[in-house]
Length: 264
Image 1 (cartoon, rainbow, N blue to C red):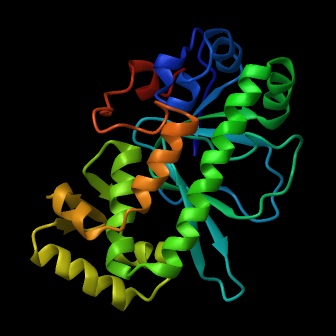
Image 2 (cartoon, rainbow, N blue to C red):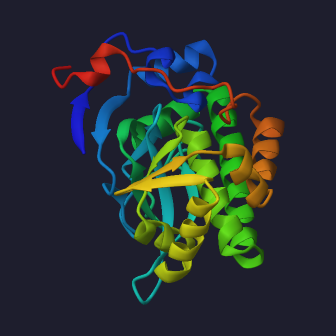
């Protein structure tokens, strides 16, 4: 990760994170004063299990991170992915608590972070900010519940289609940075199984692949192959935090000039 630092006059519209945009205007201003911009690469680890969570991170625009539970044999299984609709770490909890799962950058891009102590102070000073983040935590928990059920009940093909579509929702991009080995790890299955599914999807012209990239060629066909888990998570977001989960018309736009510069 490369620290870009704080930007004077930063607003919620500059950031490209729907959760921050959902805050009241006065809460947005107070939060933005405390944020630092970061540029992250795929594979950057935000924290490992047991690390003290000193910062909360807000993915912006195309950036996306995921929570992965690390098993005793070293394998990891994804439990949630977080893009522009959410945040990672310390949104609800108070103080510098240890992380339970690994938080890792899945899709590279810009993040904003705030010190956990600063965020705790903002929540104590604003019941509206605290309430919105608490409602987001409920949505994140619903996503984890649904992911657990999906892993137990649905086929690898359904889960693969669900994951790719969920990544598209969060990044606004039909081209996802992903290798077959990474996808196998995310789904908690062997690479051979994932390879067979990917080959079938390619043969049916649902997706195309290049080195480390998956391109959606038919979102409609991919949706028919997927389970309805993404839809259920979206419905819960819309009930609890309407407008925060990215809509089909919520397209990614070019970030402002300051975000592309390392001189801020």
